[in-house]
Picture 1 (spheres, rainbow, N blue to C red):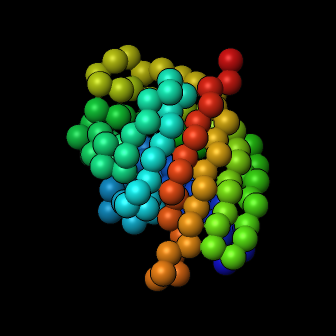
Picture 2 (spheres, one colour):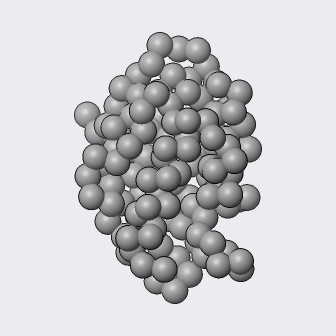
Length: 124
């Protein structure tokens, strides 16, 4: 696996989150996945993907707007990039934000990469 393939996985993951396509998104997230949102809330995989599936977390846009930098080792990869997001949470009006992302991927026993930790920091 090279850095280009990891960039594609991350872009596929973001598209699946916007489309609420859990059949694609779920296998890309480790069972022990955690995301720290720009507001400081931490969600588990079930909370995050469950919220997307139920429509409580509604991404209208979520895409990388910078190059996705990749630091790759044998079984770990760290991805860093800027994003543009438009999101509605719990029925609130959609908010637009720019954020820095730091995502840690882990290579599973089956040879597939899954995101384990995701940290998003809002850019003012």
